[in-house]
Amino acid sequence: MRVVLATHNAHKVAEFGQIVAATRPDLEVVGYDGPEPVEDGVTFEQNALLKARAAAAHTGLPALADDSGIAVDVLGGSPGVFSAYWAGQRKSDAANRDLLLDQLRDIADPHRAARYVSVIALALPDGREWTVRGEWPGRLAHAAAGDGGFGYDPVFVPDGQDAPERTVGQFSAEEKQSQSHRARAFVALIPLLSAL
Image (cartoon, rainbow, N blue to C red; front, top):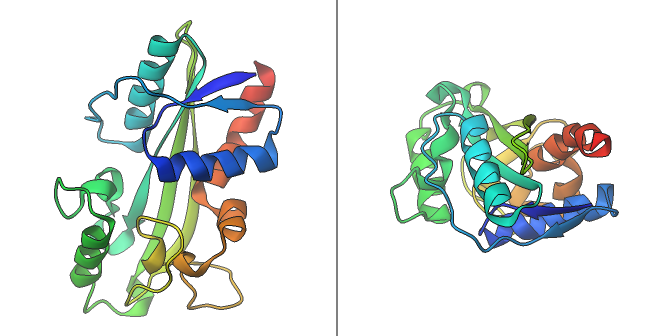
């Protein structure tokens, strides 16, 4: 089965490709070079569907789109859908992380709970569509650590690991792909893909 991945984000393309290869090698994911819609939704689900619908309409193929970010409990779930632009429209990972760490500077560990959220939308050219959600719970570190990953990875410490202070920025690509919010969402998507 061929599907188009509705993103121009090279990091997401690479990460998603690794997840698909590990879980659904029979799925051929093709790149998308069409127009990107304005992401004016207020939820991950709305934005993922906007992107998937646009890609399905443009290519005539089933389309997958991910909308994801980090949600911090003490900030009421923010940055949430604004994760990529938390520090402004120039879309800088480092500036976003620095601002978030500054906002939580005086917040003690018990109150630094956060989770990565990924919503994957599947849209078909005939108008049928679905969304699935994956969440990766953890907390925010007090300082960035590690050069791996992208976005908030160097400041996100997942729950349930042997080294309780290790950020996703210190994970190998394989470790991240097996545990991430996108991997969890994709596992939820597999039954839908299998039914097509």
